[in-house]
Amino acid sequence: MKFDGVASPVEVSLAWSGESADATRPLAVVLHAHGPLPPGAQNVTWRYRLVYSTYVVVFSSEGMQGSETQWLEADTQSPPIPVLADTRPPTTLEILAQYLALGFLHIVPEGLDHILFVLGIVLLTTELKPVLVQVTAFTVAHSVTLGLTMYGIVSLSPRIVEPLIALSVAYVAIENVVVGRITLWRPAVVFGFGLLHGMGFAGALRELRLPKAEFLPALVSFNLGIELAQLVIIAVAFLTVAMWHRDKPWYRPRFVLPASAAIAATALFWTVQRIVA
Image (cartoon, rainbow, N blue to C red; front, side):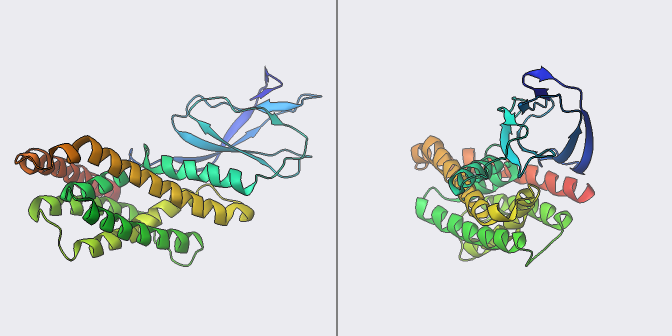
């Protein structure tokens, strides 16, 4: 921490940690920084060199009404924060922009299991309509459980949800190999898995401990960020591979089957890892 650009000694303590043995899951940590306030200090900045992903900093001090929330990327230094001046609450537009970005980042690049799930959907067929039907079913399902879980209407332990999410990734990949075509039950199965993924999304959003005034716009915007990330994954997969090679006789045996098998093996490893952890 620096006050007006001058480093200040602070004591940083661990207040809470969502520890996980699974390297594919983000680690949530809450730190409290305690230290003296230099006389006449106007601004404070924060930097944490051991962070390698996007995270949130909430700053408040005695004599300050409200708090300042900032999203920081990796080990970058925060913009200056006024020490004693009353902090203007974020506008609805600012909240929407913040959580839209967070929802996107939760999938790309941080949500590898969700990325592989969407790729598993794309691999089954090179036709856009069946892909969009499955993605729509997935979107509706995870939107429902994201909202219900955030409002405390439904609840399921992460120890159950996280292994099942990994297992859902394995299932769609295995079905790509074994069945190799769109079935009548595929959208329904994807919908069911979407319910699980929504609970996983809610867990990430809940860790941010949203103020009540920010809750609804943050929830909606976070979900929109997830949808945008899914559409980007589909567009990249289709435009870089499927659109150009889908009519080739070797497309399924040389690309779809090995890719699906690799996804299935990875997801089964995660399933075991999360159960053990």
